[in-house]
Image 1 (cartoon, rainbow, N blue to C red):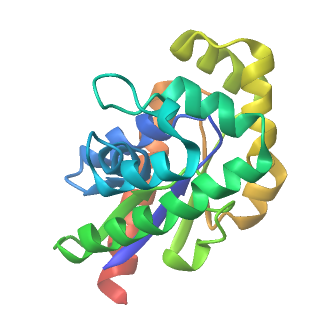
Image 2 (cartoon, rainbow, N blue to C red; image 1 turned 180 degrees about the vertical axis):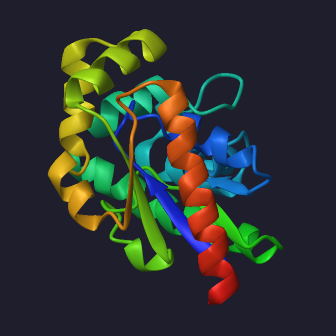
Length: 199
């Protein structure tokens, strides 16, 4: 089974593209969803985070205090590395387990930090979703109500646009109309089906 690593910066439209691929009955395995599941109340990963970062990362209802943790790691690179060293291996382990359960010609693995985690060898092809930084900022402003300053700090913590493009086996331009987006997804769907059949 062909593993397609779908990646892109914040606000590039990874969820939109994943939804379009899912319309072709292609399994979507999303690293962000798995990350959320791993830190549900009383889960082992959440307890590891509490041990590493202290009681303040747990809300009174035993859920993860995401705002506190986000502020903590974006203001301290060492703490960000500590967080990643705990969560990333667990995320990729779970993604592989879910891949092993699939019976499709190919699977989409949505991994925002595929390049940053140096896990490009985990997938067979890298599909980069690209759009201008200005577009990213506008989308995230509308979606998350974050300041432009905070959004830029997130963008700067990720791989640069140029770096992502240098890793791309395939590229979807998400700065145009939705109809063009659908056509691009359809093109890659057929390409991946043919590659899976011939491999």
